[in-house]
Length: 150
Image (cartoon, rainbow, N blue to C red):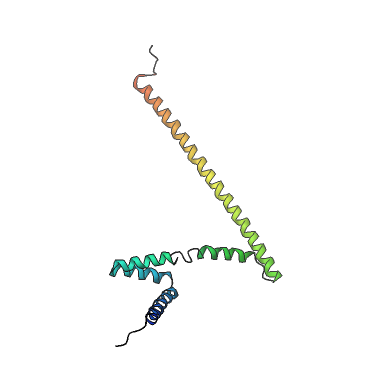
């Protein structure tokens, strides 16, 4: 019976673990989460170990801001010149026109909000005046105009 030296055993274990880790990394964060969920389903300490490792190695939070970064990249690429002066002039004019249209649309929406607010306030005042008029008519119908009795 042959026994492996401790260094050979640890090397074999490290390569298996590192290969598994590399495989999960290549599949993305979803693979890590799936492995963690399966670990919880089959034997909860395994799932807990996956969760602890993912937090400790920062795999849970890896690339969490990638979408925000891509929007920044797109915004910055709009300002970058292409080297073609005709296209750059066209792009600049189009961006200026779009910004103007956005400003006009926002102004239009503001006017709509103000008109709606005014219409709602006018309706409130009409309802309030009608209610006050109805109350006065009701008071007069009961026993005529009320007199102060002192």
